[in-house]
Length: 453
Ligand code: MV4
Image 1 (cartoon, protein in one colour):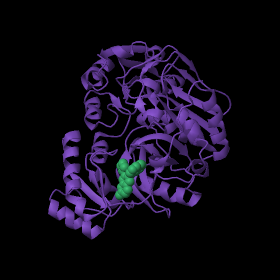
Image 2 (image 1 turned 90 degrees about the horizontal axis):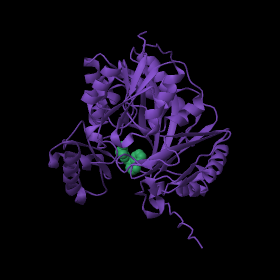
Image 3 (image 1 turned 30 degrees about the horizontal axis):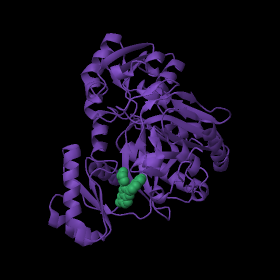
């Protein structure tokens, strides 16, 4: 076991605070980094030390490996926790950390590189016996070859960017007549976004659910899983609500998906926390989509139902802890609502500004992960998430009741938030029945805001 005494958190906002909290519980010293925009941010106050790493622009601060390494060197930090976003899935950054004798809390650069190429990740998982969606063997650049393959697979098909993730460079093609335009469009979008036009093709899975399995590996061949999260409530590939367990996953499917996820992660000798994303079809058929090599925004719902601190586990495996392949039972039900500074009545348009009043709910079964406070100015520069509200109950119904009550208590004044959207969703019949897939929000009609009389 190599001891870690001081961790630099290469992030901001709620996730920086989240990591700082666990470090302090473990007796580990913390170093915050911040842009000049974040001078008054809570992660700067709660860390033992803080280093300014540049101007507001992420490209000149949180995304600068040289400045992060310099900050680690001057403060004597022996490890870097990347959080999510920014450099969390950047293989080059994790290599730079290694080159400077700083422990990167996450998988090896090789594993991160492998999983960042979605076609390669898919091949790797297929070889490990993980089910994948039928499609092209790797990327395909010749349009005639691609069109003929699409016909062989059968329409509808999806075209996906090899360097993608999210929905960028992705096209659904329902009939052969529109294939060429979609193929060229996907390639140029991928090239513009990632500097890589390569795409691959697969059969379209109708009305899928997004279900992901939380895994943890020790880098010595041992991987365990912590069950699934249901993440189908998304809008334009941004998750808004996540829950654990999934209303459609029973103990048999959980075991099957869990063992599949372990097999996949073991095949790449996975180290650290990771997520295997699956599409689940209407009959419980599931297919590997991609692997996220970071701690995710929605990790708290898994923590609530397994009673495991996943950030602590990340740090322990980085220190050399050996894992045992025990099953982690899930108990109860947890739901997370993302509270964003966005106007849900105006197409979720960003709404940065000053929080003039902030009262967060509390009480039994309620957890809030946030870095916001009354008087805090939400910068327009970074992401719009200002809080994660997590409700835990014995059953899904209990968790929904607690969530409704907590949303009704939450006061955020000065900026528009997604709270009214969540209040309506938690009262929606289909949501309450657990009867939804990834298209649910496409035709969810939000009731207009009550006009003040
Ligand atoms: C798919 C699919 C249907 N069939 N692949 C969207 C983002 C990327 N990570 C994968 N995505 C999808 N891939 C096949 N073969 C449907 C989606 C998809 C989706 C997936 C998860 C959550 C929300 C989604 C919303 C639209 C489409």
